[in-house]
Length: 201
Image 1 (cartoon, rainbow, N blue to C red):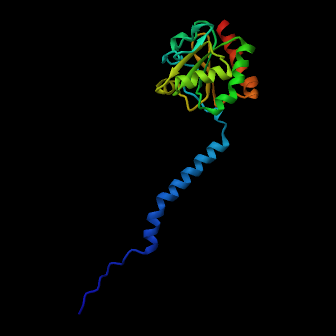
Image 2 (cartoon, rainbow, N blue to C red):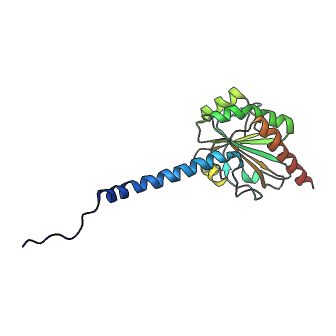
Image 3 (cartoon, rainbow, N blue to C red):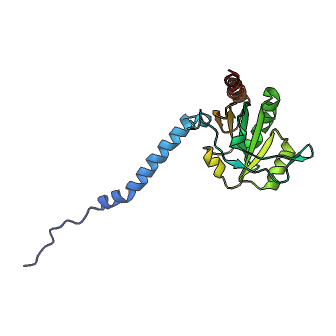
C-alpha cells in the first residue's frame, strides 16, 4: 500500500497573488501621489520656516560676477533683516522656469524698491554669469550653493523658490515655483508690503 501525500500543493492563483501584491501596492501609492499633486498648487506648499528666523547658511559670492566695476558680494542668513525687508530667490542657469520668472524679478525690484538676494544653486560659475549677462541682474547680492546644503537648510523643494524676509530677519512668505504676473501682484508684492508694515510698527 503506497502512502499518499496529504499536503495540498499551493494553488497557482495563490502564488500569482503574492507575486503581484507589491505591484498593486506601488500602483496605489503612485495614484495617490499623482492625485495629491493634481489637486494642489505647489506654490501653496507649507513651510515650517514661516515666522522663524532665516537660516544662517553662508552663500559665497559668485566667482567673477561684477556690477558697476566691482565684485558682487555673497551673503549669509545673518545679513538679512537688520530693519530692511529682503527677498531671497533661489535660481539656476539650467532651470527653464527661472528664465520665465526672471523678467518679473527685474520688475519686482523696480516696483517695490526691495533688495533681492540671489542664490545660484548647483551651477557652473560661467553658466551663471552668462545667465545674468543675458537676462539682467535683479540681485543686490548673489551667493552660490554649489553643494545644495544651503537649500536644504532653507527647505527648498526645487528651482526656483522665493522668500520674503522681514526687517527682523524672519521668513514671512515662501513662493514655490516660478513667480507669475498674477502671483507677483496678488501674493509676492502684498507679502512685501505687509512685511514693511510689520517692520515699522
